[in-house]
Length: 161
Image (cartoon, rainbow, N blue to C red):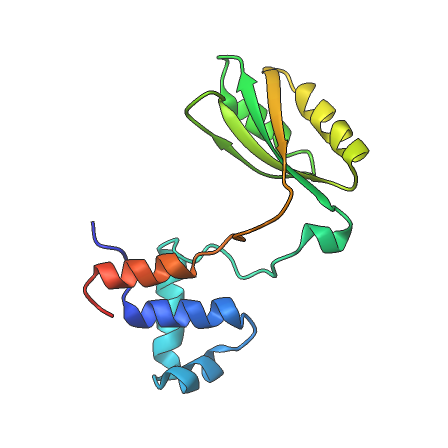
């Protein structure tokens, strides 16, 4: 399966990743392509699901949530959808994934303090179907969430660099 992007798509997405407020006209100027080309490619990438959002990225630490942790959950066999729905109701849950391995789900949570983290984990543990948890607290964020290297790899795999 060929990735749905080429080198120009990767350049457009990288530019908007670095400067999300740049605008289509300025992006077209910097990339030396027509404004309509940039807009059409962005529209296509969005409709294909490659681009999933245009909202601002928010730093939880700047909002006062200075503690971050990954919680591995062991859940009952009744299904993960109920648990995902309940987890989505907790504002401190940033993401949750069904996994293979020693646990059934991994959940990324934030809290204001270690004591607040205990409150968050206690709330997770009260969810019907959650049997037990294991938690690791994040000490440092060595490689933040990123997708630019994937863009470059996907465009390169098509033989277009």
